[in-house]
Length: 155
Length: 193
Image 1 (cartoon, rainbow over the protein chains, first blue to last red):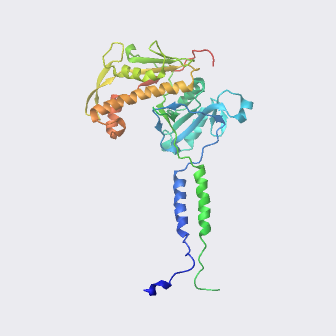
Image 2 (image 1 turned 90 degrees about the horizontal axis):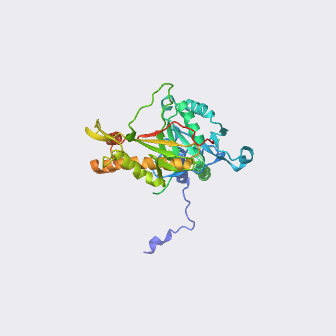
Image 3 (image 1 turned 120 degrees about the vertical axis):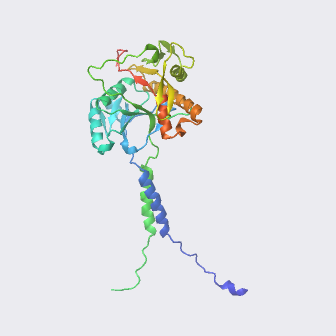
């Protein structure tokens, strides 16, 4: 019986770390695939309104954002409290929306140009005047698919 | 030159590097997708288009003024949340009331039979001074009304909610209960910007 006793090693065996990096890489690729880079930093404060009947937007690559809201703390001194439009990385006027629509369409493959959803991210305190102006500009520029971005409220 | 076995590479630091990348992507990614109410804007008006004439009883006029007060068919509506039921009643018109929308029978290809379709249209007009929050609340109520009508129809005819139907069934139901929300061309009522 005593025969089996002798093979007790003193040091713990090394763990093989090679497969760990494989697992981490798998995670990495997963996040790389589902990720889209965080959108341009907002210069306007936006608190989205609440709605119960929201639908999710599919295909992020086919969404273009139009932000409307009061300028940030940083810009309030310069621009005042009047709501402003932000397109990509800069403040814009209502007249610039047509140009924005055009460049956004240019940047996408031909077949997708009419499938773009224009997501209006508007602060809930903003008056409809500026929103209506933007919508009129979009109609002129043939941008019809609109999403009124809002957060989901429980019924 | 020494030949023979190549020494094993130390791969321990590799996982460190991939961890770094992983944390970078974790931080920069945003999984939550955008969500909201989806609408289609009408094409721009042409110079000489005539107004489509609609029977008065088929149009439900919803007005929202600069103080976020709502008026439905010249009747003051104190609460937004009542708009859903009002819209449902108007569109479906279960009692065939003379002041609510008419109906017509339409042959629906996808369902292979004739169905009663409401002629009702919701006409929404808001002031430039209306707050966006109220606008969304109104749009939400209208959407909810149409969604519930679709669900009702699907439940009675297919025994399951609208979202669980097949593609062609859904198209059929969309024809039976079309979302007729028309936004009036903007007019400046309030005077101020």
